[in-house]
Length: 297
Image (cartoon, rainbow, N blue to C red; front, side, top):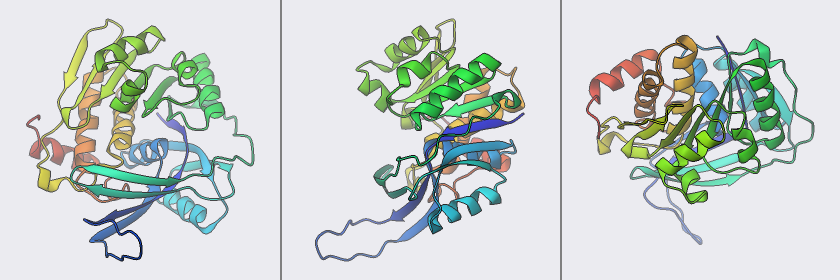
């Protein structure tokens, strides 16, 4: 059982601070973390940390930040299929009070075409919608090969509508619902109408709702992580995606309620740590999160 992840890579600079300087002011952050970033990228690392062989088709530069990214990938045995860009993309993340502000600098001027891999060797393909041409190609190829297609709908991308027609599992954010001007429940119907078999909307601290092909809407509450333990919510959704895929790949016949329950515990672990790498959960971390925060919000 293995998975291919397709998306855009970042180096995340996460700083914990109460004050953002302006003008000529200077401040000192309380803490900081430097890690890999990007939606499908973080999902791939999370899936790999949970023991699932994970390949990653993503943007890579030849600068020193790109080299840093490749070192991180080697540490987690994530095989990278690079799509060359001139400069590494950066995210400056400022978490505070359960929220996070993000400033991005992105290079998506691709210097080479994406690699066309044989998807038949994978059990699942996960897309975050970035690299629009690659996302559509792999969605179609995976559907033709009978490989599960998972989509992270953090927002509406240029060809999201078309990609959805080849998607089996779509987990979208509230921001996605706002962009298409539909409620969470209406969004589930919207996704099913485009052929999605398992449609879900994540709602932050309120948990998630989802439905399968029978249309029955189910709710899964978020685990009750005390406010004082919530350090950094950035990347929690990406870890969620990687964790439900890891759960699915280990036990494809289990209900999606089981996979999503596993993933919510993974997210509960992530929010207690600064930066994506520190927040990647192990199996033991997920057991601990379930035991400590089993009460739902």
